[in-house]
Amino acid sequence: MIKLENVSVSFGERTVLNTISLDLTERRIAIIGANGSGKSTFARLLNGLALPTTGEVLVHGLNTRKKGRDVRRKVGFVFQNPDNQIVMPVVDEDLAFGMKNLGFSKEDIATKTDEILTRYKMSDLREHPAHLLSGGQKQLLAISGVLVMTPDILVMDEPTTLLDLRNKRRIARAVAALDQMVITVTHDLDLITDYDRVIAIDEGRIFADGAPQDVIPTYEKLMS
Image (cartoon, rainbow, N blue to C red):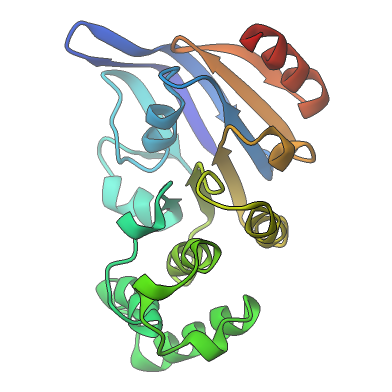
């Protein structure tokens, strides 16, 4: 569970998020909002990539301000552009990178690499140059590189923005099959119609919070 207690974030005199208190417990949660609404900052709070100016963020009771490293082992983060996340030149080397940093054994690295490549039907790409992958393959590699480190929670920031329809659906199927709790920041409303909860942020505040069939129409009305 992730808990936000009276959280505000400011950059200089600009308040990006304003006094937000939430308990995030559902298996699939979406965060929506216009550009500049504060939703990406909200996402970065959840694993300590950003820290609140005031208030506290707790992940399974761990304070992101005090236990950031421990929190990031529990909450994986997938960035909007996979090129910003893929750091090694070859697919299997990129998958191994994070696990090596966490001290996984060679045997565990090999096993987890095999498992994730098989899961996403990418075994034939094991030795493929990462920068030559398609957009959908890169996004799956970015997601895979986080999942092999076995986080409890996965936060994704606009995972389908750069993808065509076929690859959007591929990512949606991959996310739906995950055992982990997933929190997705997105403009893609079709992606989240079957989520458990949707939170709409507007000008740094919670505008609506509830089931997709209730929140999405309210948000669409706001945007119109």
